[in-house]
Length: 221
Image (cartoon, rainbow, N blue to C red):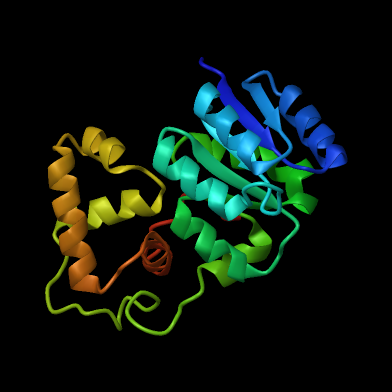
């Protein structure tokens, strides 16, 4: 079995050492690089192309939000797992919108880091239990409440499956490969479903999927 290649970025030496020890203790994980600032982290990720990048939110150079956005755009095969002290759910939605696939509190790392890395590496989404309820809570309007969405047209099976897989963190290319259609078809299914339901962002798709129970199989404890 191929090992999960992980890069690590955090500007706190103690945290860096602790997370490094956790990752190195797992024989199924290979630590391929470390950085202590956002710009160095981006260069490292661009060069190493890890499966998962574990990054802090608050770093010099590029902060976690900027880094996540750049990685999602320039290194689409690398999935970002945010590791942070910030328990405010207001941080979660912008990071998901920028392309993060996971959000884990540092106080939970000892128990949940390896689980989170595996979930993100296999195409899922991991949200720390302390923020998952708030992050996926219904918001006003169509995106939060599936019954309040514009349901004049029902989703086709392909449209529903596309949204479900998007919410699980898969890219259009990965979804196309999984259900054996073209990437162009996936883009069409996504656009049609989003228009029918009034969904505009990945975060809104995730909230909609959570409300429908589509994420029950994910690691949301």
